[in-house]
Amino acid sequence: MLKYGFGGAHPMNRSRLEAFYRALDEAVVSYRIFKPVMASMEELLLFHDEDYIKFVQFASWQGYGYLDYGDTPAFPGVFEAASYVVGTTLGLVRLVLRGEGRGFNPMGGLHHAMSSKAAGFCVFNDAAIAIKYLLEKEGLRSVAYVDIDAHHGDGVYYEFEEDPRLIFFDIHQDGRTLYPGTGFRHEDGRGEGKGKKLNIPLPPGSDDVNFRGAFDEGLAFLEKHDFDFLLLQCGADGIEGDPLTRLEYSPASHRYAATALRKLADEKCDGRLVAMGGGGYSPENVARAWMEVVKALA
Ligand SMILES: [Zn+2]
View 1: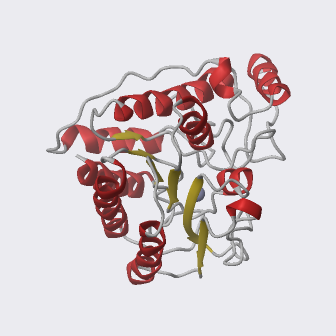
View 2: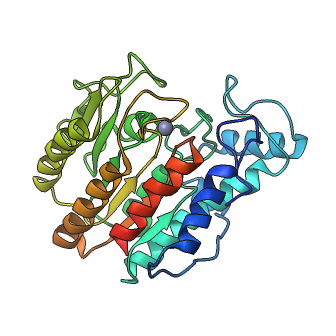
């Protein structure tokens, strides 16, 4: 998982996961480590276009340049690193489907990647691939995806906007003030997907109280729908002090969300819940927020 990073000067670097792993080592919590696995080409193709996958393979071999407009650099082995993130999320999904507890992939939740392009530090969208896998390979009727990262999960939202099988709920900093500039209230799905999505933008400066208010609205929305699996993208970049955003949550928001979703998954879908790390660019904040998630799930 540490291989997915863009170097020390880039916000998405290995120091964030290292801080989380140190905190996990020191914590009194019961967990099992699942060895990362690489996604197969067939799994990547569940969501991504073949031409785009080949482009990433070439850039990975070449080892330099950008995979997008300038946020997501190529590096030698980026294809393999990104494939490990996807394979690991899928591996956890399979374990959870077999009834083996709940899962957390700290490097997962790469929610900006689109089917045909990289974006915002995200090469392959493990969350979107997991959704496709659950619906198309496992035959689940419906999946819920909750995203509390400071940025809107545009790579999941737009790719499933018309799909009624994805129940989508996303809290993020207002798109008028932060990348990727989307996720407005009126974006509540299209066509058959209308009413199956809820986007709640929060203004800069929003804190735990604002988060809780928005999250409770999302919980009421999720309660109204049925689903067979729950995915959580728990980006830690909404915690006060993050260098890229202007939200001011504390890790208590992550505890609140993960605890409520664990309970909801127990009620709705036999406890099937996989969380994915997502963003977060202060290593200390990442460690604190994700430990709250791990404790809630464990
Ligand atoms: Zn983010």
